[in-house]
Length: 346
Image (cartoon, rainbow, N blue to C red; front, side):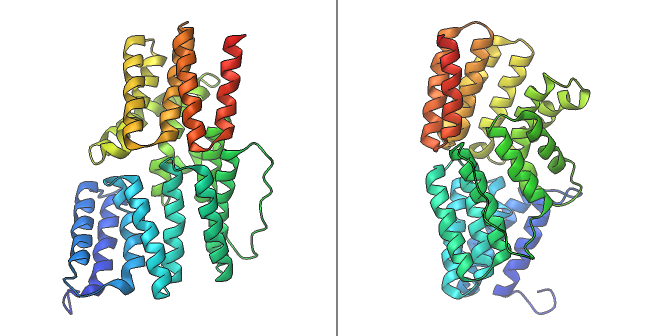
């Protein structure tokens, strides 16, 4: 572009630079990267460089999968990635169409979209990938299929055979195993896989920011078993990271800040502050339409009230948590909460 002038083919390079600003650990500048990304996408919409329809699938992936989730609502990013799927299929850009499909499912899962609907969507994409004989992307989508299936039901999951030559990147594998373990209350297993992501020197930035929240919440359980400075420091480090993230998008990250604050107050015995923060986390999750994290905040609030002997409040929050998990489509979590309620009513 510097040698020949700016054209519509420069747009991808500008988005690459914006992504580097957001994700590079050395000279990270999320605000600058997001601002540049928005300007680039606005330029595309204005058709200043003519039609970019042949690039739409790629541009959707570059911006909405790698940049926009720092500052724009997860659900909006997911909706635009789904548009990128259709754009790629329409122009024959199957590679970026399927990359958009993968990331739309990822954001759907992390946004709390209904799990049964997500499973159907995943199966639709898997069928398309099978027809195109894209075994590598299909292998990655199968990981989402497994995670979603395991969150829906405790029934035994039989994983389909992954085609020879397909590779599951280690951090992708750890992301799914950590997420599965967290929602199945397998704290030590969750900690094992989450730590591998947190310790990764390079790569996995998208996995890192999303798994940090669950890693931090899980660390409170792990700390009850293993008392180390490292484990005890995890929530404070995560809280600092999410406070910074919330400056760019309260919609995506404010509920996470408030729930981590609540758990820290709970740990330190500051009960009034804990109650206020749990209530704030529930309200923020509801406002962002994160039904799974609303349920999670209700569940944690219930456990807090149970801990301090406020039985009726605990039962009320457990009931709300169960309602959220049912709306999410997770019978696994709904059944777990039912067991908590039954124990309290004995």
